[in-house]
Image (cartoon, rainbow, N blue to C red):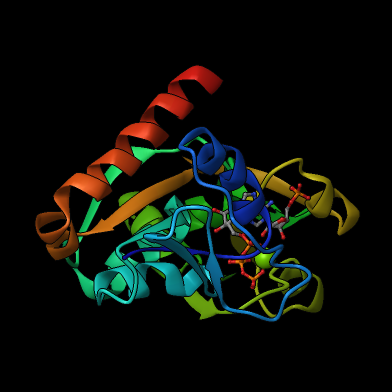
Length: 219
Ligand code: PRT
Ligand code: MG
């Protein structure tokens, strides 16, 4: 049995065409079923639904052989665990694309705050990425870990800046925030459990190769 870990929402939706191109059809709609293990048309392949941030954990510990996760989530996971944590990252699937940026309230003088080295407070779900980014600029910041609604932090005085994902920019605009730094581009990655790749090389390779071919034709 090959187990693929996916999260509901944009990653699941954008993975479906890649699975289809690989000849794999998921037999349930995750929005309509309460099942967490979904069968596919291939008796030896199943999908497990987990929280987006749990995908690297499932794959690292072998709860799933493969998983699809944002580069953001993967970087935070490795920042916490160090090294590659037993995860092989064979493929950039080029789905669920966005960027990770620094944003502040309209009118906040970010350049001055950076220059003066006055300790800025930065709220984020991505403490590993944020720490690394500001350290690379030689700027000391106080990081506040949040689990969601980052946009609220500068509006309530909880923080001066946020580090968050941006796609269209509409969420920032609606909350009177402006993007002041583009830290990096983000897309989703296929990750594979190192031991599973050794033990079940042929079927896992087949999936990796089919995904690679599908990505190549879609871009
Ligand atoms: O939502 P939940 O707490 O369950 O988990 P999650 O937020 O980790 O999962 P999900 O499904 O929301 O996101 C999964 C992955 O999709 C992320 O890890 C990213 O790699 C990728 N992705 C791509 C995005 C976006 N685009 C995105 N725009 N994830 C989140 N957003 C959010 C962003 O955080 C912000 O609140 O959308 C808002 C900004 O969008 P715009 O279009 O208004 O700029
Ligand atoms: Mg979300």
